[in-house]
Length: 277
Image (tube, one colour):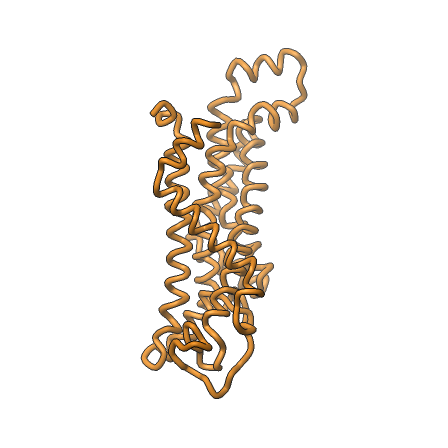
């Protein structure tokens, strides 16, 4: 643990990204205290204004404060990203454990279902699910969670296949340990490191998918602020108020880039080939 901590703080990319993500989470959690205005409050006399002392990043076509909406949009993006990935991790880990440990017919059935889900592009599958269930935050979380289940299923299955016949697992079987104990206490802890890395990378993908769904009008519904929805609304006013598209795009880019770089850094730090360095 001390070795990992030392290598972590030597990795400048990991440290910078962790700081950025901490600030993002803090801003999202403290949005009600930081935001100068209600994100849905309309100031009709201040529509499409630029940056000012009262409106730090300007206002949109309805006179709503962009800074406040971006802060509250961060809450929605993080909630959707983390919640959807949690669904993917839980079900993907379970399916991966069952498929990898038992093999045979169960492995065949589970992996064929995952192959069917993999056959569809992520955004199209998410669109189809949301279109069937209806727009809204819960359905958006569920759709993105379902889309990412095959990724985690394959990841866990491949790890289980590589370790289920190792000596310490055979020893647990020989002393009469139950199947559930072997799966969850002997095998699953070895999946934690790759799961952590993949989860970090998947959150950025989930945020991007949510933004795309909201951009198309099938994700988070107005008046709730969403970065994708804000970008979609700004298309007609790009020349009059370029900040409407610039600021939510910058916020989304920094967030996704931070998660991706942090995930890449974790992957390098948790790689056994780098532990001795």
